[in-house]
Amino acid sequence: IDFEQVDRERNWDDQILFNSILLYVGYWALESAKHMPLWRADGLLFMFLLHAGPVEFLYYWLHRALHHHFLYSRYHSHHHSSIVTEPITSVIHPFAEHISYFLLFSIPLLTAT
Image (cartoon, rainbow, N blue to C red; front, side, top):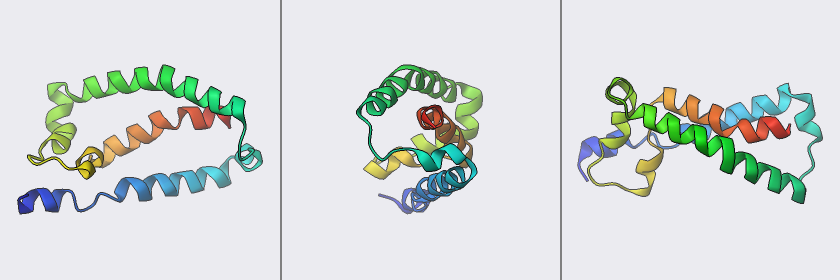
């Protein structure tokens, strides 16, 4: 692994911090989030169907759009520039992609809330 890849992938925890902050703010901003039960079997099925249906469909088209020349050269090429891929390479994205992924993957949570 060359230094450029290590330097590019050293901020791998940005997505974790960003998502944690947004989930914390959402918990305090949405009153109904405070009354959600810890576990419900029908809720698990509901989340699975929401994620496997519309979220995966939208993710597929978002990812296809990110591979279009306009977005790829500006954003997504950063993710594909690692020659030696490691597990952490999968979550190395520019900030705009982190925002779009958070919005996309929050659909089931916001719908349930």
